[in-house]
Amino acid sequence: MFDIGGPEVMLILFIFLLLFGADKMPELARGIGKSIREFKKAASGVEEEVRRAMEEEPVKPAPKPVGAIQQAAPEKPSPPPAAD
Image (cartoon, rainbow, N blue to C red):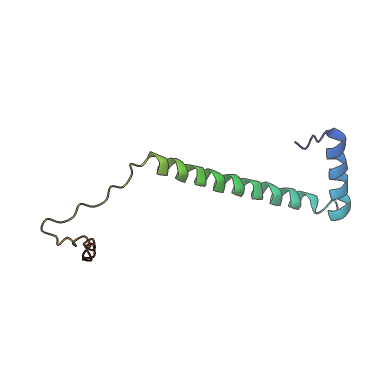
């Protein structure tokens, strides 16, 4: 997809070195590493939730209580009387 080789990586590292300086590089690398770990942790949590949801049995609707009053279906209108 990105097809980044050795020379490209070296160029990127050189640009980071120029932008942030040598003293900030270890701090920047730790921050990037921590961000990647947090992202992976969140992604695995979401994946686990999806797996758990797929393994659950579907929820069945609760049965109606015995003796419950049922609403009558609306009556169909009667046809108009025939004209004589």
